[in-house]
Image (cartoon, rainbow, N blue to C red):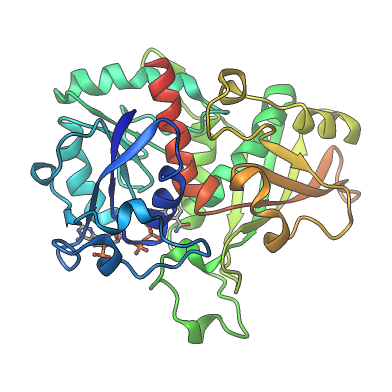
Length: 347
Ligand code: NAP
């Protein structure tokens, strides 16, 4: 077994880590950290549990410690679910001796930090060697993208490999859990939606192109097509929905687009990694799918569901579809765990 810790273990994403890791066949939870407010308490007393399934018995009696590397030992990997501003300071300290698999955005766009979706760009793990050399760390940091970017990029990857993408417009309908438990006041969400999520559109526009880019000589050159995002918070608990409009440079037909997504498999599927969905993209054909409540948990929440795939009659070589991805599983904790499984397998 590989011993692991969770940084920010009491929050929305931290709890998903606990849920997923407590039944993991290769990773065993040994350390839980949170803010000074929670440190010193039993996990059961420190965390207000938000998830449908009960808190696993195995973590209830673990004492939460401060998020400081001196408080954590006997682990190989730490999963970070820290707020970004805290992650920026703390993750580099942990990386001096541990492997850090992070959800936070703090280190994502650093030149020597791999930003990875294992089905999309596993080769970016080559940056680990450069990072360790640059920074003199025994450990290293690997990050996963923002939750809405992950789902979008998984669906774009097979299309990008097979066709010449000209531009992508995406309009999101994002779940409230994406903002953390205290993120959006209930008065703002009941009978309402909020057409702004700070920093989200910029992340979708830059991270997507970075992930689909090319690593050469230790430098990532982003993909060069246009991505334009409009992000909105809606009163759904879990599961981000995205409406995608894609235009290709050259002629292609709907059957080819369908087959490209349907046949897509990546390295995690080839390696049979524990958290890898059998099919990264599941295509539904009903006219009213995907829907977050019905489709977010496909393949343990790790598959992205695509539906309403159709030609866009208004423009040449253009297509539209709607996707649903689970934001705290495929878009956060599950993504980091899949990254760690890949690292454990190939590094
Ligand atoms: P959250 O619910 O607010 O949880 C934050 C966690 O960090 C809690 O465990 C909290 O501990 C701890 N924390 C807060 N301040 C701290 C400090 N100063 N020192 C140490 N620990 C501190 O947030 P979340 O939604 O889980 O998000 C966590 C990270 O994942 C963020 O960077 C977020 O952007 C990213 N992310 C979230 C999603 C999503 O769908 N929610 C998706 C992708 C990425 P206490 O309980 O003690 O306060």
